[in-house]
Length: 255
Image (cartoon, rainbow, N blue to C red; front, side):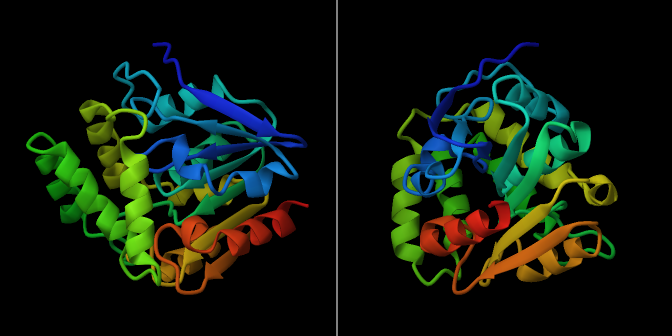
């Protein structure tokens, strides 16, 4: 099934693809992307059913990845935040020649706790959000955003920005939100991490409660060519609380 995804491109240099997190859209990068556009041609994507992108019932991780691959340049660096990091990581596994380097922001190969993997969310948290979506999706989205800023030194300011961004391009499709939550709940890419052949940079917030720093440390053990960057006093959106620091770490990794 063909899905039409919205993209926008700016900057010049090697190609870099940016993928947002659950419930939001590419507008979340508005303040951060220009810091990378100085050195890269940046393509931002709205995921299926988010922002200005269509929703056509695509539900599996590989379908979401294929929809993004169809509209972005290749080869390119892939950068994904939170849920976007799952897509970027999977793309590096499925099409290694198309992903020259991988950057994940506040992301993990497995977002929920499993035996031997405790640095993650309880499955019941995502199940509760999924159950509440049908009743009041706006309230559910707002509650999830509140979790994303928990622990951040600038929690109030970041939450205000995320709330403003949330509906700036219209409400996301409820079915897309449900599908995204299911991807976060069910996806486990740990077994595939050793197969990623490109350089990997993981950037996490020191105070992130959704993807704890230890999840990054555990992921390092699974990878062949990876580094971990911890952003002081940041929560789940380090590119918003410390944009200069995050951009500097990315530029130093890629250039």
